[in-house]
Image 1 (cartoon, rainbow, N blue to C red):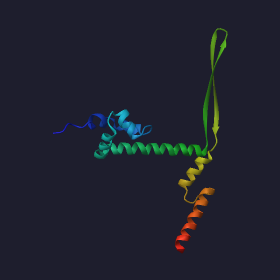
Image 2 (tube, helix red, strand yellow; image 1 turned 45 degrees about the horizontal axis):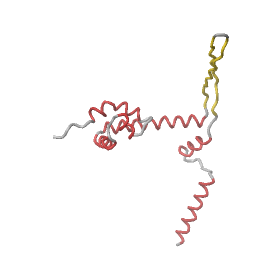
Image 3 (cartoon, one colour; image 1 turned 180 degrees about the horizontal axis):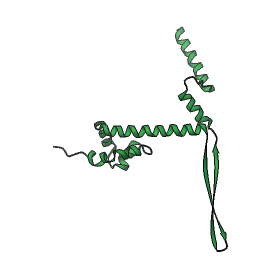
Image 4 (cartoon, rainbow, N blue to C red; image 1 turned 90 degrees about the vertical axis):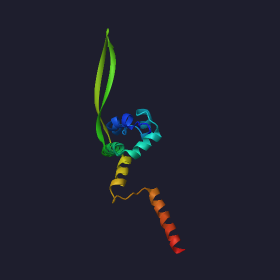
Length: 147
């Protein structure tokens, strides 16, 4: 009889953490750096254990949701707070001065373009390169139809 796998000791107890680790690491890093198992073993466990597949799937879904939210925030513009700390000598004392500033990050046209391109089917992409490529594709299609 073969030896017991390491899934129960090295993977299963960390399923909720694996879901969180998907935010910062790729699957190979999770396997090797966090769980201490070979990538091939991790791939085998993914095939064999539905709960591991689900943890990875949920982690990736959360990452995608977070990235979409960040992109939307950047597309709309946002206000944030910046802190500046300076230290001054006053006699024998060091005085720390903390200044807080509200700043505004204006809407980012690249983020706007990407969101509209992916979310609004009626939005027309007037990017010259895309228009030129589509025109060339149309010409090629016409030539094929004529032959």
